Image (cartoon, rainbow, N blue to C red; front, side):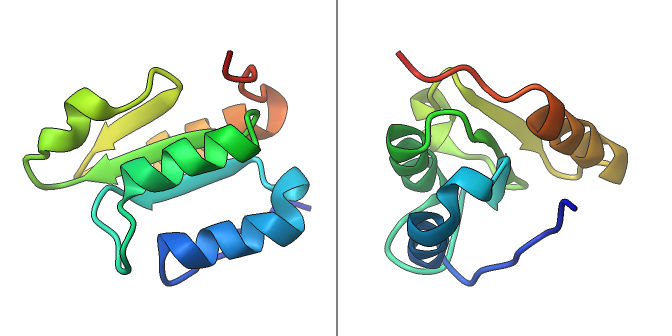
Length: 101
């Protein structure tokens, strides 16, 4: 049964993925994160090691990093609707992302 796991930083997310990456369908993260990595760095690292994970990044601030977002990352500006997140989660579970080439 799908569930949501909350972690405190990108580094904690990558630690979790090291143990359970094959069980994760989607990463939903803000571009600005606690710790030394931001959401874009997390997305790049996660897709390198787990290329079928769907990645959705969000931000409510004007973000210069949007130009640096990889093509395989979905960006949802804040404020977003809960339904939009559920739609992305549904896609992640039933339509895994193609591996990054």
